[in-house]
Image 1 (cartoon, rainbow, N blue to C red):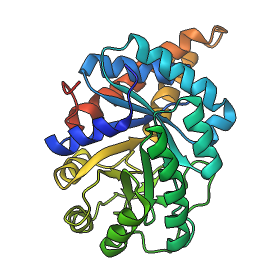
Image 2 (spheres, one colour):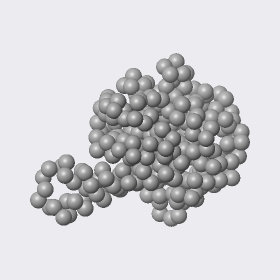
Image 3 (cartoon, rainbow, N blue to C red):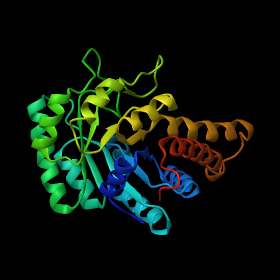
Length: 283
């Protein structure tokens, strides 16, 4: 069933678990993520970045998600990750996305609030939840600029003002994680997270989680995170399965054959994360 993220995240917040949001790059990713969600009886969010929808289109991904959700027995949402402007978010809503993120984290605080508020007003009118970002999630997201040399943490006072002013329905916060592949051991600043959670009532979102140790993620959920994003690990898993098959079968020219082990690797990663997030058997 295709649903919005609003009820998903409210239930996760009330029952102290998190819903996994998994970036999907093509049909094989969609099928692999749904297979894991069905196996684990878990609600699931599939999401696409602007870079991914430039490769295909919002309509393609919305249609694939709707087709997958039609036959699914678990709640499924399709979410725009890191929406790069008002127009992109409007296009996603019109295409059938059931959740969008507007990412104004690269502009000044006041401009971020104004941009987020403009998207949130339309989202409220259309019944589409709107995630925003405050603070800096490090690394390089999609084809956007890398964030280096800046304070990565969300200020709790600013978070209160931001949520009250914009009307966003969930908030991605900077607590030390980064997009892409970590060069060292990542560290979530749990104290910052707890300070924000104590003052902000809407669901909180953790980005840049691929490669973060499961125990840190579990602690972050205990401290108030309700949605956890994964992208890089899924790409690595698919490539591992696909290339492994091709290494053993170099004469294969049917893309479906190496795609199957690639999908199986994705499903294993997704299922493992669902167990750690506490979303298994929550559907």
